[in-house]
Length: 280
Length: 260
Image (cartoon, rainbow over all chains, first blue to last red; front, top):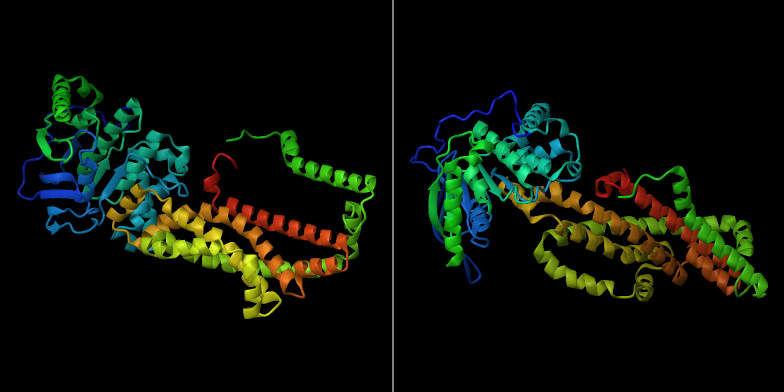
């Protein structure tokens, strides 16, 4: 279970995963603030995320992490400031971003594979494809399910799957249409520790194959350190970004990585930063 | 989450309502005989059974009329109820403007409105259909709207950042999600529709079980009134079972772990 694909040995290489700073970030926030009525949720945040970068946002609860996600995806308009996705300014919901939440929200009337295929019915160009393309798309969904270890469960109904398996299917649904941007809002928060670490592996594996840009919101500092290229630490409300911590651990990271001194040092450092924020 | 029942347990489970009904009938029969209750006050079940057989053609004719008006009214209620429920459930503007009015409308006793309906539409089939519709569409509206409101906000966000239109959110998630609520309301609405058509027939009709019961009562044929009651109850239970069967078939996913 720890290594979902035994044919591909999990070896540690020495590639430093943080991509080089390019002139063309995929997501850019410029001096963005958001007010709910009179409450300032996010305060003058500037942030730039490279294509293919895996970013984690951590911070005390209520610090506006989820707000930041809604802003980046265009679900909420900022009160001031600008948000850019590639070359276009974000003024409404993005078209074709992947999203996964703590609640897997699989549709109970669809089989697992039909749940995974849902975005293909909505996102261009897939939804315009002729009926004949359906079997090809189904094959693609099946191979994605194979990667996350759900190959034999495509025909099951979602409620026949365990919580961890539902989250795997949820990740597949968020990725099936090969989005450039994947938003993850505490996707593993409701899972037990073992399942959680399995899914870190699954997510890292998917990310290394597809190299989508990922923004992960999490409370779990170990999770942030395990998965991200860059961890941003946010302050108490009103949320602002206090620290930017590049994670220089080699990929692929494995359960052994979590015993690495560099890893535990980073987690402790993050913990100290959050503790400092909370005591303010 | 009940475990699978053995055939014996199943027999016991499903025979219970029949046993209770049988016991009540026996008590009724016994009480009538012991206390010598006159037939024009309370006829014995055996007398009711005899009357039912004696007037079976008449009962069948009127039952068919009542069934027809009820079902037409019920289908109109489904169409109007679903359309209105979807409109209310998917737009907060429509919700704000219509919902308070619907609550007010629903609190009007429909029986009191039947004379008005008769003035507008004459007597007979049409007011019965309208009354059946008016009395049964409200639970459908409320349940469909509630079902749409039960869509998880996360799911809406997922679909919106995929670029889904409001129409797509509605058809991919909203409507399937509200189907179990719709079927729950249909089980209530079909029995209400029977009440509506019978009330209307009692007030203004020359056909239907309601009319038959009224004319039987004016001639003190109390056994025939009871026959009418039984015919209505049987039709109502049968239509209820039709709704349950449709529900199991179309939204079986909402009953996981029960049906197996």
